[in-house]
Length: 115
Length: 112
Image 1 (cartoon, each protein chain N blue to C red):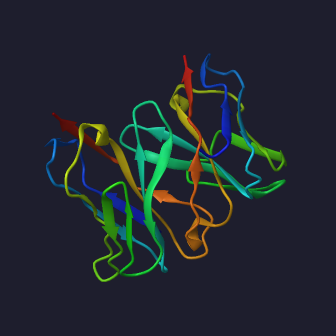
Image 2: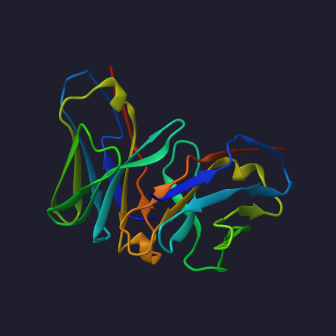
Image 3: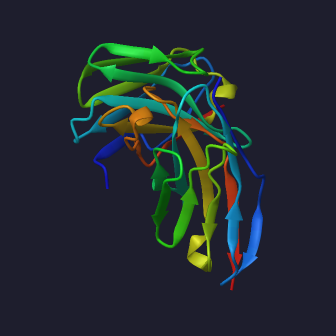
């Protein structure tokens, strides 16, 4: 199994509060990703990183920010949580571009409920 | 933009039945194609992949062939088991791209 640890694994928070999810990898992979999974939508990319301090937006980035100050850590922040952000969040890593056939490996997920 | 279309589920089969899950794609370039599997309560795991036309990916009895002429990457297994019950995702990444685009997933339920 790829060395990916997500924390927290489960969280309930109130609308309007800030929330940070952490992804830690031990594989020294260059690329890191945050996806969300919702019924009827599959997995949708929120943000990704292609190196320390290098990040880019995905298709559902509104309301989310990310930071990567070290190769091994990728943080996802919800500045002011809303009920629409209730979801399962997956961190993923890849040694190189999946467009070149490289595999993306997924963490076990973080279940976030915004009440 | 790039997109992946999968057959809607759930697909319900009896043990030892033949499985096909259809996947078609739209891409501007020459993508790599992937099938991932998600068991209940877990993250996604790579099942198989193919990076060029006519390549066949295979793993654990599952197979899929990269068909450029029909822009398809259908998943097949000759004899399913109860333990194959899961959600299956088809995904693509266009040549040189840094991200994966997923289909919406197909749930497979196998009964004894």
